[in-house]
Image (cartoon, rainbow, N blue to C red; front, side):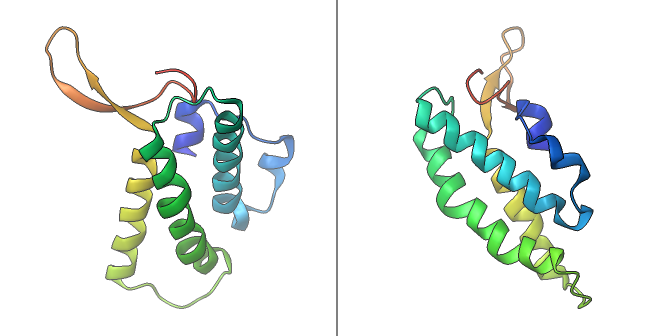
Length: 120
């Protein structure tokens, strides 16, 4: 939801009324669809490394490992190591949608989300 909100990614009308257990999957699909649309049009702001990381590493890791486990309602406990892996995957995923921003006054560099998928 953070990425969707930060980048103003459009979501389908039925997004809000779908089963809450599937919300993570719905969010990832909305982000994936928006990225693929902008890649196809050729106006995406992400660099090729960000697109490749999103497509080939972080999205598949989240979908196959974490979403499948958590959205099945599996009652099994989660170890600290697994939880740290989830957090790390999510952090890496969000980095695909950020750039280095240099403050014009202080010169400090920080990571910021792009305004949307076509604009910094």
